[in-house]
Image (cartoon, rainbow, N blue to C red):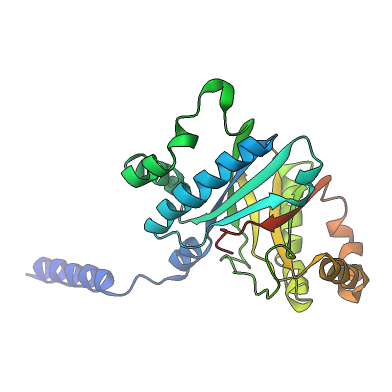
Length: 266
């Protein structure tokens, strides 16, 4: 009799636990941080650029919107006019790493996408729409878990989006730089100075690792220069960057100035 009462009591506890909202701290942390997919197209001439623009504007972005990816950013490097290796970036938010494959499968099943993107999809080997493409998977920082849409008022042709990549010598040293952004207060400093960041992230998969990437935005280049001057002159940054525990945690920095296309979602 006692055994039966004990079993009934255990079952009641299990039922109660599953009936409660699943909102413990571990689950919250797991769900809080977004993943991002950054696709980089390398191209060399106006013909390739035209095919890419047509594909992205009329095929890919409409298809992504149907998949409830409403904010896809498309950007071109400001240096494209004179560069031999011209760059175009496509940025989207994904729920998980597995989402990248799911999106690809959904696109393959989308007849409208296949039709609108035919010129790009069916390009022949000696008339490819790009020289190479690469995909980078990013994981949002703990203290910046969600993408933020930039709050800018200037025209797209005036805006400056600054994409930064910080490479570290080892994984442990890289984590030290990530800590500097989060617990160290670097993200808070960017917020206080109005850098209007879109995202801060660790590179989970890419050609250059270990590294982190983040994007800040400005009304124009003059605003960008003024913001960075205020950053390097700020007493908090001077104190933070001089701390012994944060020395030599970045080995190489790449800075790419971007401008959103007319059809970009932000």
